[in-house]
Image 1 (cartoon, rainbow, N blue to C red):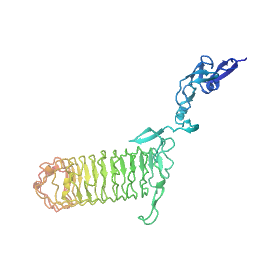
Image 2 (image 1 turned 90 degrees about the horizontal axis):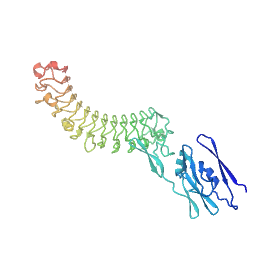
Image 3 (image 1 turned 30 degrees about the horizontal axis):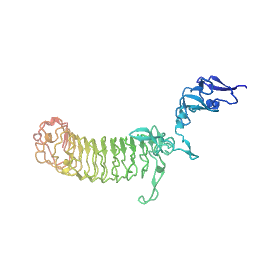
Image 4 (image 1 turned 180 degrees about the vertical axis):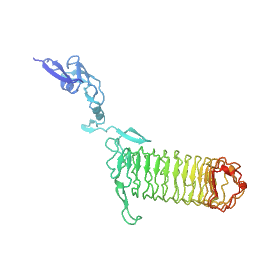
Length: 475
């Protein structure tokens, strides 16, 4: 009999055809060799000790960039032996196949088909990879089902940001800009009865945005999920709109935010804890709104530096309503209706505070017991009747204009305010200047304003420090 001859052609990494010839003799009509087709399908370059005959051992070599795996993508030994029982011969272990790295990764996630009770069933799919977002970082985690935030595509496990719902706004260089667009309106003439409608409900902010600007966009409401997935957001500007509140949970996924601006709205209520997640916040601007109360414990905002609640309707700064972080340096509270402030309410780091145009009286000073580093104090246009009696060791600028202050008793600036450079006492009820009021020398004091008081003249012998030390003495 003629021997059976098989030819296998392979391509090496240099794409040069290689011919492998196997000869399989017949013995009494029985062919004791392993399936040659399986060897061909392996897509590998074989090197066998005895063709594919019984007991032959074959090593299989893949091209560069490929792996020898089974159908599930699991790596297999690159060696197999032809094992025969009677006339049936098979490769042990079963032959795998050379596959590219990309194909291997796909096959690892394929459902496995198994036989159970004579039926084909699909085994539970192994958990795939999903992206999670936290503290400005993205991380891959195993998950049976990916729950992608609104700002990310669900296909691929939240890997790519969603950018298909940004119009009419512009999105470029990680900045989402809606300035000047009309994004919402009230459906009826009566804004208390009408429903809010508009394009704001169709918008999805891409998850990789680091700045969002909704300035002057005619916003009446903010959808709760508008910023969902914006894990690296740094700046949020919602100024110059018609907002009446801020949704609780709006900033749940945005703990890197450093600057928030809600000024020039109609906000009259803040949900308790709406800012508590913003541990990196540095600037909070809620000026020009309708707030009567600050019901916020901001103690966890340890990086907060600038807080602006000016031009609201605040009536008090009470320790039962608000906790101001110890990091705050600049506090804007002017043009409110504040008549009460709790003792020690202001933080140690406070550098400058503006309390002008409020309803404060002489008991305000206890609020500054815990703020020895105060440099600038503006309390113009309130209802003070006497000059501050507490000591302010670091104070350089004191604005006390537009009150009802009279200088009585032994008040000495050199003791109360030893670092003072500028003092404004205009528009008060000062009729005489005590001889002890000014320090012996004006080493730091450069300007005093007594305009629009009852003083007709200040005699030289009434000044404890020389007039030449002052750059300006207005009366």
